[in-house]
Length: 181
Image (tube, rainbow, N blue to C red):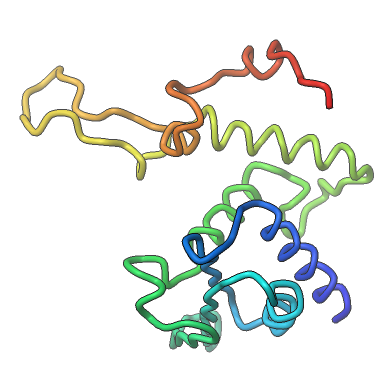
């Protein structure tokens, strides 16, 4: 159990360092019902404004029976639209598990070196965010149903966030100069 607490504390500390949280920028957290998340949020984010939603899924014989939402801190108004779920992070975890053999369950492809694992993870995250187009991020260009006309403008997550205007490639990753600190 202490491993879960350590990992949850580390995750929450990393989240607090990612942004400038204040009255205008409130952190929205949605997790499953693992108690370590709740304790970590209460301990580490005492001075940072946040709202917290727990998603509790009940399964019987591997079939999903019920999904309940518990607003630990905040209300349903704080989580507009489709943000009342954990499916986005679950989808990312599944994608990474499919692409990185070290993360697959019941595999012979285990990792002996943490540095190798970290490097493989960063390479896959670069590919996922900067190179690969995501169908859910495409924008419709033309409403006409004519043949041979480009109908969508495809985006990567980095393009959608405004980090780049075009998809990057592996040559860019290898040749870009690394700034020294």
